[in-house]
Length: 353
Image 1 (cartoon, one colour):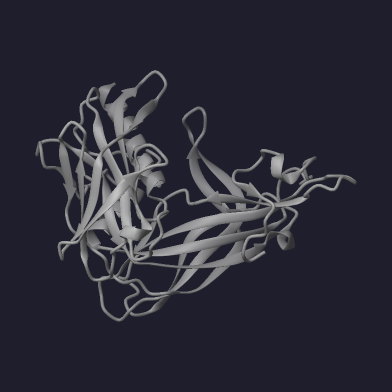
Image 2 (cartoon, rainbow, N blue to C red; image 1 turned 30 degrees about the vertical axis):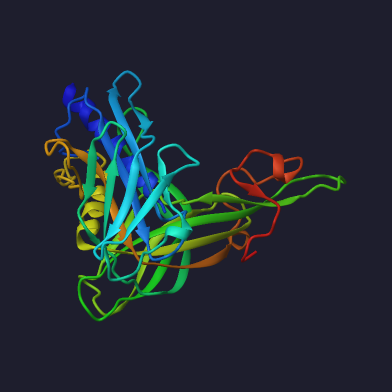
């Protein structure tokens, strides 16, 4: 059973890395079930945006086989810096969230064409570093399209059997003109904001609000230009849910990647998409670009990247495609700011609505 426990533990670790990287498998890492591993997730970009330029450090505790989960502990009070190939050093400061180290706007010195290396020093003196990451340019998003369609996914039911799950939603695609030179690699992430209404009767209370869902990607979306070099292409990025008949704004961020970063996320997605059937490809080793300076034998999980970023958004009028499957939508009662049905609610109109 030890192999099974390690499989679940390592799958959970990589899912943590994907969630923290947003801007989301079986893994051949020989880690003892009683050993903690340092998990590093972060990046710097060519945008002076503290929500993007940050690094998250966590420890993984032994796999809890009874509850089928990995206990995650934030790494506090570390000294974290990013250096470029010209010798410039940028400190990252912890807070307000524990274990999250952010590059402040006044310390921002990131430019395209330079290489960046992450350095970490823990309070007990242990040190870690990343291999240099080149910050490559990224083309602008040419446009965003979407299509209302039905999806069929293969999932496991409660009995462990593979079944088909049908749903409807809006497949959103980024339109890209790939540069003429070969060797361009991309990653996409999203931010979803939707409006909703409440029934306030005759009360003078806000009846329309908006909820910021953050990233709604269920996996890390990447691509290369091996088959589309120098050509225009459309990349499916995310599926917007067809649940309530209101407007939904989807913002897409397009990141450049190095070839090594692309390979990391490609293998991650391959293993994340595995359903455990005999037709799945054999698991490949996912290599991190991080290592211990103190103990070369210590395994470090995760990836530190450097990316150029471009973004665009589109507003989907979901009400034009209703009714959706399921019960008819009924606005909840009360002040829309305090229904507690959705996260990050505001009654201040966002851009695009």
